[in-house]
Length: 144
Ligand SMILES: [Zn+2]
Image (cartoon, rainbow, N blue to C red; front, side):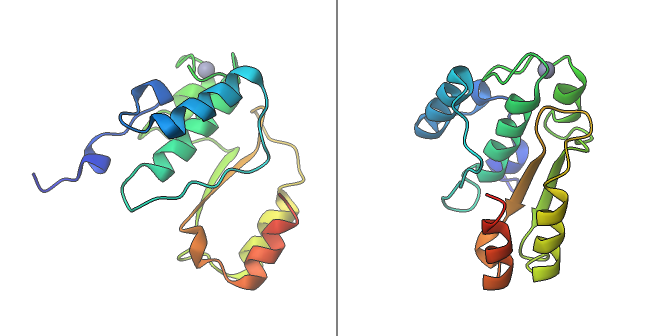
């Protein structure tokens, strides 16, 4: 029992997420209705599924048959973004705890204006966003 649940269990769609209906339902509804915002903030204790949820959101948004709460699992984007998959060139993950610097945020801000390479959306997942310094946070505010 040394491996925490959140490490052992990596869902790839909101339907596979257990016990977070207050999060998955509104996000699924937003995907279905197409009322999608520029940025989403996931907050909660460590291991509750913030990063997993953000990855699922990215997969749902970029599925070729989407945006959909039920990614097809077969298109290039779905295969790239499956849990423990290779990842997508259009979905970038930054760890603010190690990239909490202003330069990175400025770099992100500049690149965010280029179109995605092969997906519908270009998506940035910023982990540990509370580590962003004020300069970096300001640079990002201009994007969202
Ligand atoms: Zn798909």
